[in-house]
Amino acid sequence: MAGVSHHLSRWTGLAGALLLALAALLGGARADAPLRTNPVKIWQGPHGPLVVLAWLVGTALLAWAWWSLRDRVPSVRWALVTAGLWLTPLLLAPPFGSRDVYAYACQGASYAAGISPYEQGVSALPCPWLDTVSYIWRDTPAPYGPLFVVVAGLVVKATGSLTASIVLFRLLALVGVALTAWAVPVLARRCGVPAERAVWLALACPLVAVHLIGGPHNDALMVGALVAGLAVVASRPGRPGPLLAGGVLLGVAVAIKVTALVVVPFAALAAMVGPYRIRTLLRDGGWVVGGAVAAVVGATVAGGLDFGWVGGLSQGGAAVAWTSPPTAVGQTVGYVVAPFGLHVDALPVTRGIAVVLLAGLLVWLWWRARTRDPLYYAGLALALTVALSPVVHPWYWTWPLAVLAATAPVRDRWYVVVALVASFLILPDGTGLPRYTKMPGAPLMTLLVIVVAVRLVRSVRAARRPVPAARGAD
Image 1 (spheres, rainbow, N blue to C red):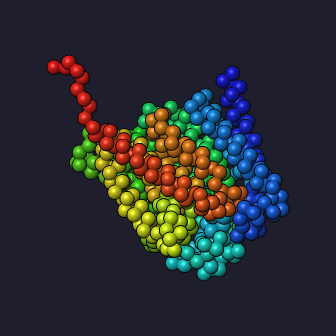
Image 2: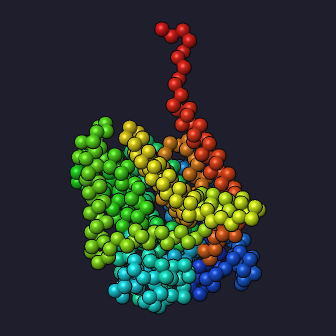
Image 3: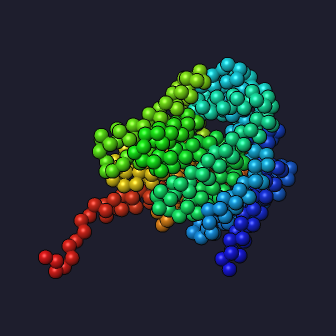
C-alpha cells in the first residue's frame, strides 16, 4: 500500500508540474507579455480563466504531493528521480513567475559592452531587449555579485540572442540544483538527518520547480554553491585543503548573492576539530574565511568590477509587500493611525529596526552555535535574514530550506509550512498577489509576528528557569 501511495504522489506531482507548464505557455512571463498586470487583467486576458485555473490546480497538486511524502520518502534515489520528473516540464516551458531573467540578460549585455551594471541601469546601453525588463530594474544598479555579472556577460556574448540566453540561464540554474542534489545528502548524513527526507524537502519543493528552474533565478546557483561549501567543510573538519575548498565554494555563493555571507561565520565554527577555542577557530576556521574572501575578491578583480554591488542591494526596497514582516508591520502602523487623520510612513523605521535586530540576532546565534551544531544555526541565520529583509520574494525561502532540510531535527516543520504557503503567492506572469492583498495581508502578518515573538520570549524564559530538584533527593 505504501508503494501505491508513493507512486500516486509522484504522478500527482508530475500532473501538477504539467499544468504549471501549460500556465507558463499560455500566460507566463514571456518576452511579449504585458509588463504591468494585475489579477483582474490576467483573468480577462486571452486564456485568462484557463491560466489561473491551471496555475492554482497545478500548484495545489505539486504542493500536496510534496507535503504528503515529507516523512516517508522511500530512498534518496527515488526522491532524486521524482524531483527530476517534476522539474522537467518547467525546464522546457517559457519563464514562469518572474521577469528577472530578462534583467539578467540586459545586465549581461551592459557588462559585455563595457558598462558597469553597478554604476548605471540597463537603460544606459540601451539593452536590445529593454522592453522586456520590469520598469523597476531599468534605472537601478544590479544587486548581484561580481561573479554572476561576469557569468551574465559571458552568456550574452556566447548566445547573442534573448531566447538562447534564457535557455542558458535555465541550464545554469539546473547546474545549481544538481550541485544541491549532491551536497544535501552529504550534509544530512553529517548531521544525523535522514538523507532521503532531506533531499525530498530541499529539491521536490514547489519553489524549486516553479522559481529556481521556471524563473529561472540565480538563487539556484547561489544555493548550490552554498550547500556544497557547507558539505565540504562538514565532511573534512580540521583539514586545511578541504576547508579552503569549502571556503572558496562559499565565496562563490557570496559572489553571486551577498546574502550567502551570513553562513560563513557558522561554517568557520563547523571547521573546528574539538571544543571551541579562539586558537582552534583561527587555525581551522581561518581556512574557510580565507577561501571565501579570496573567491569574492578574485571574482571582483578578475571581472574588472568594484564592490558597488553591495550598495545595489538597497534598491530592492522599492517593492512593498506584506511578505516581509518588517514591511508588514510598517504598513499596519499606517493603517492603524489613518482613521485619526494621520499619514505616517513607518516603513523606513520598521525596516531600519529590522536591520539592527537582524545584526544582533546573527551575533547571538553565532555565539550559541559555538557549543551546538553550527550547521543548523547557519540555516536559522539564513531564515532570519530572509524574514527580516525589507522585501521577501517566495524563492528567497529556498536559501534556508536547502540548509535546514539537511540539518534541522526531524520534528522541526515550520520552514516546510512557510515554503508551502510561499508557493501560492506569484501568478504565472510574475504578478505578486501580496501587492493586491495589503489588507488584510499586512495586519495578519503583523499578528503572526506578535505571536511568534511572544512564544520565543516564553521559550527563552522557560529554558533559563532552573529545574526543581526531585523530592527526597539527598
